[in-house]
Length: 459
Image 1 (tube, helix red, strand yellow):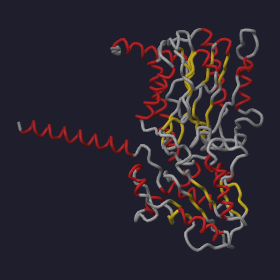
Image 2 (cartoon, rainbow, N blue to C red):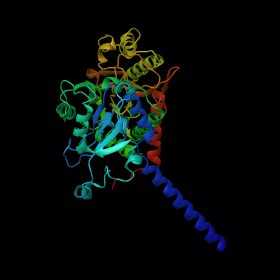
Image 3 (cartoon, rainbow, N blue to C red):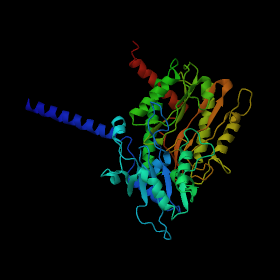
Image 4 (tube, helix red, strand yellow):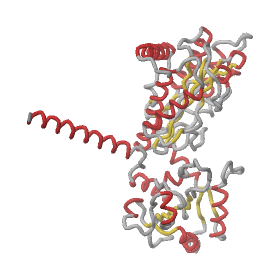
């Protein structure tokens, strides 16, 4: 009896330990990287400019809807890891001819608002005793001090650097508003674009960034596997997307990296189809471009499935042409290769493949049904910053996503994978998710067998 009680105690203790470990995993699922990572980025940026850098975070008022959740401005987050509204940062360079006494990296944040915090939770404040340890900055000051501090800096520095707004800023005019504010604060200074330096920095991913990206990718792969196993004629497109989003969130993704695309039949030929209202029919081909975002970093994956679990002869023909075009583009990925500019670029490889393999119903080449680019950068944004005409470098993460869209046949096929450029070539970060016809049909068949063994209750 005593031994039985001991075994029960040990079992309970093991269960509690497992529970605590799971809580720890979930609790850290969305945490930022170590402060040293952000401090290193700030140091690198400061060494590249001859004047103060001023970057503004989002205010939290960009979206006033009841369902809005705060997500930080990308460049501000990249440099700070600070994920609360109403903040700014100032970085001051180390220039021998202009020595600066005092901190060179300053975070400006609002003080505590106890009334607001009753509704939204406690936020960091400049007066918190552990604020420097938590943020990793040399100094943390009230946001109200920023204008006066910039005016003092303008007595020494003639150049200031910030994010300049594009010609036509879409959505909330964050950059336009804060550019006007900055120019009013330092009217005698020349305000220059920091993104010319910052965007190339973001192109090369650290190991910490790659780890976060892989978590987003793994969650997204699991969601695509689920879709392969459960897709059936009669389901609605939104039901597939809903299952995939649930898997993302259970794995710790904070949101979707972009609006999910699940297009069946004719909708498979619409590049950014997002209504998801149609019922999937027998004989349809279904394009699923769905990816989650983890720790601020995006996944971007597309697979194309036959609704019945078996490609028709024509669907298979088009699918395998797209797959081989993707393989041809992948084979060219290495440092020095180009996405769009110059001979032998990836876009040219895919276009040439489509024009020399297969035909439409009129016997014409398929190249005209390839209507988008082969690749983009991936990172804090699904279409991440950076010059797409520059040569590839080790540490960049790109997509490789050829596709053919033939509206008159209701056939759209896109295959998209996330790829790390390595010093010797490339690594497919999404390699765990099958791409071949045989593998996809096998997984879909296994899903149907499993469903027959364990049918879902419908009452």
